[in-house]
Image (cartoon, rainbow, N blue to C red):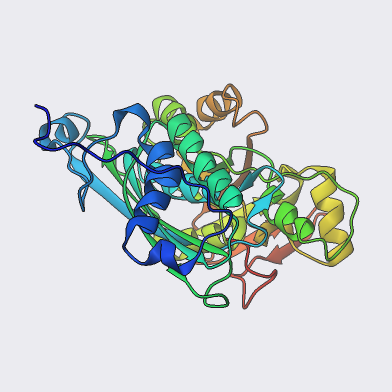
Length: 353
């Protein structure tokens, strides 16, 4: 049905920087949202603007028996870094938080807080990256919000993404499900994201090409679940790194965890980076790595399935779950000794996500 009155044509959006007027609720704000956000997220399938996204419950129920819901905020400096940017980071972080719970990600929201003076070209790049990453992950960015604040009220650009997904029927994974004898797997090289962000700030002037591992992992997780239907737990090792995840696992499951330093997959550049700065790579953040716990009788096929996936070629078994010393994580060092791996106290690095 044609509207009863002519719809005015959109004016060309020519602003070079974001101003407070772009958050004022008038035509300037409408033009920013339409030209920068809706054109990237909706494309040719743009619907009438509403204050909420709507989903068909029958279609969701056909994909699983429970709804998963998560939210996260992203604040990173610099906004663009080797291997990604804050937009890619925001989509991957929320997609992965859904996927490690056994959910099939369906849709995301995107709320942005923009500092007055941010270059529109940079904003377009970030939004375009979000759209591209969401498409690769098979999710839609279905609703959102935009706020503009005065200079100094935020650090250039903050993004909050919320996601919904549908948990597969019959799948029950969780941080308290580990059992003695289980095997710990990771899907690849550790520490790349933390090292890439710190080096991208330019404070250290290190000559390295380390890139962030930022990636949506739902496809990899589909493969892993198919290979190891008895999987106990999955977590993405983001802030706090592997050390944070295994400590949460040991405490929640009332088990011990024993890691092997020689088994940790890590590129030599990251290992050297940590040695120079006196950092522990177990605490470095990752944005494309999961830690999975599987029964021992499924470990070999799970590892083979991970290594057959493009995002798991460097996958490794890095430790085992034990009945000894519940709540304690230890690591056999490369020299044959043993050390305790505790939760991080304070910040090892400036915030990176």
